[in-house]
Length: 400
Image 1 (cartoon, rainbow, N blue to C red):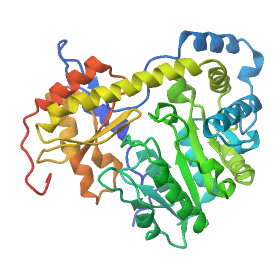
Image 2 (tube, one colour; image 1 turned 90 degrees about the horizontal axis):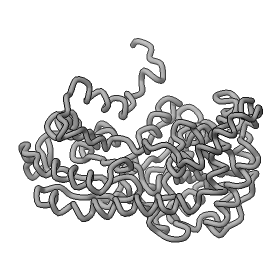
Image 3 (cartoon, rainbow, N blue to C red; image 1 turned 45 degrees about the vertical axis):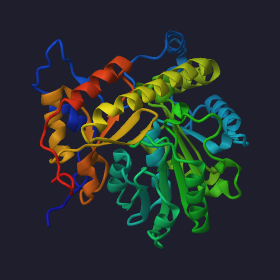
Image 4 (cartoon, one colour; image 1 turned 45 degrees about the horizontal axis):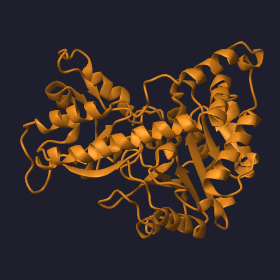
């Protein structure tokens, strides 16, 4: 059998793959491409933050290596922010800053898992999580979700083995958009603690949760110090995607292991991104609240437009943060229809097959829509184009 590197054995990144579908396709002026494939905001940071970043460029320390686990001032500010949001004490010594939230996940799993260990990942999953586990030689155990895209603690319990190291949750969810109820998260926390596992909660989209107040009480629960790990991204709240600044909250003993990963891979998080994140935490709370209101309004716009698609046999399975997860009515699989949707409707969306195991038939029936960069008028146009698709419909057993 030919030798394969870990990357050769890992699937192609979905977003770059989907972007290749638009190569050579002409979009008429009256029907431009509607790109709902990626969640990253394309607008720059607000002017006041850009000004602060420009000023930081002139400071010599901006261009030097910084502490491996991040700037102390940013760690302290995020600890204060999370303490206030969750009504629980978070010390700066439990915070690490990373080069984006993807690196926070990678560093955490590198510190927790060895070759052949297992991690439970709810489906549909965030594909970069699966890619990293594959590249690390960790076995991904798919955790099926119900029709509302919610994982269940009893289903998870049956999948735990002596090799299981962690359960991973994303809430608000990518790709499903679903905001996990506190009861769901709490039950999975209890399960993880009872089995000596880590519960990793990726809260990249926490700033766009529709609920007021903390979405869960895990930071107040007994044993959270050695059970709970929280991941976060500054990219979405402050539009700092290209500056790569994320964070994780974990116990200091685990952070000492994560420091080894960080020092080897990145040496330190980018200084300019950290300075921007700190300025944002200190100055942009009202601006972020307005951004949240806008995103929540776009979610309402999608719910209002859904009758157009429901009349054609579509179903809305999940909606929240930047995402809507839809079940389509067509005969062919979403991975076949994705490139065709570019040509026939001028819409670039990711098929559900990119978020589930190849053996899971649910992927063929779904699409993810990311609406971070499309306003109410664009959403109405998007739904008109999808409703106009006249592809052959599936039979009672779903897509082929």
